[in-house]
Length: 281
Image (cartoon, rainbow, N blue to C red):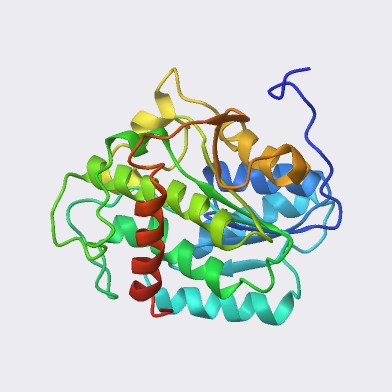
């Protein structure tokens, strides 16, 4: 049986935190993992969508209360608050799915002083993962990346975005960071299984901030959110011995990112620069 057709394992009793869980891939993954027995924790930015998502996941859980935390990853203070809330409630987190992110119109800079696409896709997830380091021992960190990393031009020394690039190039750079973060985490955190994956082009709210939401909804070749979430759920539930920690996956198969993205030296520098950027150096 191929890995693409193999049944996904059981998640009963595991605590799974999913960011970007109020719609799209994150919500589809939350519903699927909950049906597989996971204690799913939702994180989202928009209160109304987060409440609706919690209701949908609660139905999948047979009426069980689903914890939901609002956090805006464009504000690193929000990430600290979220981490405090999770640390207080959970001694162990089995899976942290860093799924939040997307495109940001123009050259936007956050209140923390970083290029917005890079902060919301990478720096916030990097900070959250580091703040939850102890809770994640023996667990997994899974980053939602993208094949768009191939058009990225990430400069680990320019996380504030002083060098302006187009929105797609900047998005690709952030997705490079997701893959490099997972690879470097495997080297620095051997007690945590880390991975990144490409979900494919999915019908979702992706790009709604720059006016392409309609395209993602009607494109005939776009995947459903459930299909996009399949590899995420598979990485969360498959026995760790069957996975390659630090690997980049496409449709449940180990794939090779671009040469620049796979460079261990660049990944190590990104890690160190990211630590400094979020105040953990």
